Image 1 (cartoon, rainbow, N blue to C red):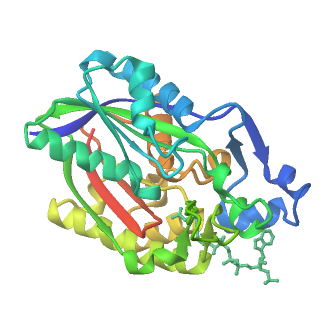
Image 2: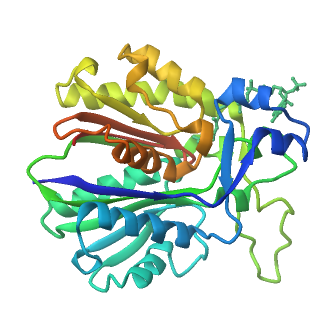
Length: 320
Ligand code: ACO
């Protein structure tokens, strides 16, 4: 028994901010951002929260799948920008949906969060513990960006994507996930001051710090190797895969992975132009956009791959 995605949904904040908008408040340009990343516009949260975006995406996924909130055995949210330390985003979503049978918790695996949530769902379902669940990737990254650091803040956007999953004979055909905590420092956000009276905290705890070139090197080596291992394990040729839905960090990373796999550029959809990098939300948002456009057909083989802070990575091969 494996886990199958029954339906998808996504939600983006109402406010959009273009590269040109950013160039009015910092020393940057549409040309610099677009040529290096493929990003044109991002959605940034004003009234929205990580939980409200998650709930909106979840409602759409439930509707798309024809599953009711009461049928959910679990809710897992991959996020590093939950609105609270506690309660978790997943518990807030559970309350909003009235999914009172569900066990709910968050996973912190940064941009790999949705993949880790999918694999956790598989483990529960394969073990026979649960049957139906909701997995979400959601971020309001704009709340942890240093808006005076043009080398990071221009890259990110806010949003949420969700999928309803259920036990089935087909669906997830194979996966792997991994972490390299030794390299965690290349992409970090300390975040938590120690409030006890014995400690004086450094001042810049709140923001994301990134060594862009190290992250780039990590992504272009780890992602194709991880995908190749999953394809080998499942005896699948790259040519047999209909879509490679990669974490949307940077179009150059996606092109590099595509060249290494020699699978054909047209199989690597990109939505960076209007979403930017939404971390854990990027894979489920893109998957939902493809689903809504009718690009996914029953039986299609689809690779999902996420990579990010931790460092972490996760790859799944699905039969749609
Ligand atoms: N606008 C204009 N100039 C800028 C900007 C900006 N927004 N940001 C940096 N610059 C300048 C720098 O100051 C530097 O100027 P200098 O040469 O005068 O010192 C110059 O541009 C080049 O800076 P680099 O950091 O060397 O730029 P690079 O070509 O490496 O591109 C980028 C930066 C796009 C971040 C690249 O390293 C990259 O793609 N890294 C991958 C990281 C990534 O995608 N992270 C996303 C989050 S991680 C994740 O999701 C997994």
